[in-house]
Image (cartoon, rainbow, N blue to C red; front, side, top):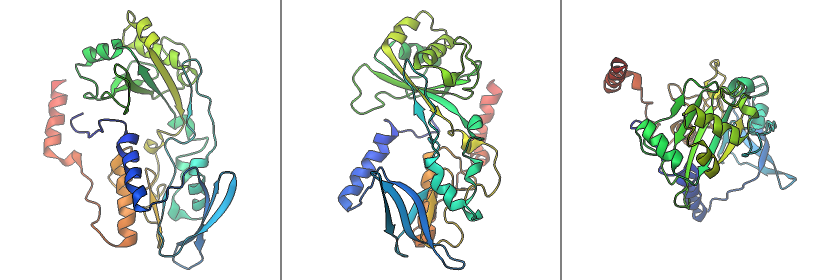
Length: 331
C-alpha cells in the first residue's frame, strides 16, 4: 500500500470526531437526525438562489429561511444508502427507503443541471451495484497469524487480498491494529466484501446476500484453506454482514451529465459535494474526491482562495509506468 495514504485508525475517529471537536468551540451548530425534504429556490431568470430549507426532525416539520449571502452545500446521495446489517446468526434484511437520495431526486425534477439520480439509484440499479460486506472482530490470534504468513505482510501493510477463484469474488482488508480507539488488547478487526453476492458460495451453497455472518466467515476461511484452524477462528470471532445495495454504483456505465457539477449553472449560493458530483479525471471512492468537490464549490461560490490543484494523472507518470512495467515483466 505504498502508493495509498491510509489513516492509522478508522476514518470516523481519524477525521469526523476531530473535525467536530474543532468546529463546536468555534460556534458551529451541528443539527443531527434532521432529514431535509426540499430546498426552496427563489424565482429569478437565469439565477438559482436558495431561500428556504424544509426539514423533518423529531417527528415535526420545520422550514428555515436562507439569506442570499448564506451558503448551502448538499451531498447528493450516498454509497451507503439503504444499508442493512445482519449478525452471526441472521442474514441482513433489505430495508429500501430511498431517503438518502430523495432530496437529489426532488432537485433534479425538470432541471437537467442537477444530473440524473436514476442513473445511480433505484430498484433497477441495485442488482448491478450491490455488495455484501462483512466486519470480523476476533479475540484470538490464529487468523491474523495465518493471513500474515500467507501474504508476507503485517496487518495494515498489505493491499486487498482477493480470492479470485471464489464464486462471490471475496476481497479481504486486514487493518492496522488497533483499528478502533479503545480496542481491547489482543482483539483484531478485519473487513471484507463480495462483488457477486447474488451467486452461490463454493462451500456454503447459498447466495451471499442470504448468508449469516457465520456462513460468510466459514466460506472465507475454507477458501484460505484454513480448515485445521476453522473451529478455533470461528469460536473467537464475530462476523457482521452488511447488505449495501448501491456501493458499486459509482463505477457503473453512465453518460456525461448524469453527475451534476459542483456548482450548477446559475447557482449563487448552492454547492453540491460528494461522490455524485462530476470531477473530470478524478478517481471516485476516495476521500480526495469528496474533498475536491467541496473545495471546488467553495472556490467558485466565494471567489476566493486557490483553485483545487490539478488531478494527478498516474498513467502519464514515467516513474509509475516504469514500476507497472516491472510488475508485468516479472509475471
